[in-house]
Amino acid sequence: MKFAKSLALALLGDVAADSEKPAKKMSIDYKQVFVENPIMQVSDKVEVAKLEEMTNEKLVLANKQWSDRHTGKELTKKMLSIPNTMPFTPHGTMRYIDDSPYCWVVFAYDSDEDVESEIYQVAVDVAEYFYERCGVGLLDMAYPSNKATFGYLIEDLPMLLVKHSGRDKHILQKHLERGSFIMEDISKWGMRVLTDDLEDDIQGVMSKIIDEYYENGYMKDFTKISSIYMQWYAAQNEEKRNGAKIIHEHVVEISKQMEDENGKLIKSKFYEEVYKTDEIIKEKLTAEGFRTAPRKIVNNFGDEFKAEKTSYSDEL
Image 1 (cartoon, rainbow, N blue to C red):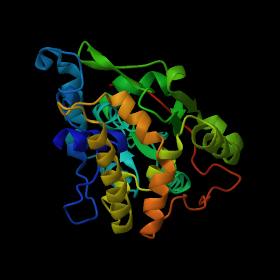
Image 2 (tube, rainbow, N blue to C red; image 1 turned 180 degrees about the horizontal axis):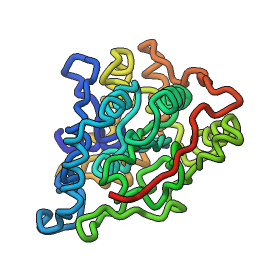
Image 3 (spheres, rainbow, N blue to C red; image 1 turned 135 degrees about the horizontal axis):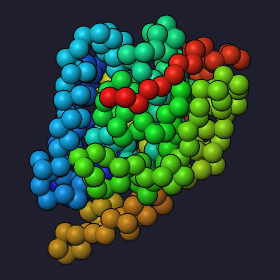
């Protein structure tokens, strides 16, 4: 049963809400997100015998100094409070993002350099636009480990990174080099949208992401349904929580049916079988009064991009 449950959580995303605990609004401590030594958060995910020996002491020190410095932290905390988003970090990407089946839109900014009035509302609008379709991540490039891992993709800020759905589309490789996370080439998992592109045609950019990453991309019908009840929604919303519970129980039921006499099953075949049951899960959700289609897109973007472009520096 434990194995079946773990597969269910993997199918829906590794941060599935515990259905036995009451829903509550999340409060995030930025020091628990932007940790000093992120590789220690993924000891079960990487191919390293002695993780401690891989520690990049210079980067750990830079992370600590940035975290302890109070300048700019009010914006850091405010961005983390935006509903229906996840903080985007190397360890979070490996543990949660790369292990989820959804498409992702990542809003990159710098809390040390960007002006709150310029970026906060844009990030809120991005989260609203992709709600119930793609996960939305917030990538703070002020955090040194984010610079070390994702910096080569960043030109100006704010900008977007977009990831295709599916666990075969990994942003990060499964090994480390000199204590650092290593990215897969972006052509293998998605695209980036520069500030100039957002300024030139924000409406066209948003529409393109929906068309190519949600409607006409790799997103399977079962995943589209489960994206309405993403687990980070469920942590704050009772309706989402109950819908996610129905999907979770459905997936566990399939996994138990596919186990052999030794209680084992092949993950790839299990996932294939689950993806065939989109009509069944629709019926189960509908019978309990839950939606099986996302809400209408909430588009708060005008014809002009509301944030000013700022230069990016990759110096730690």
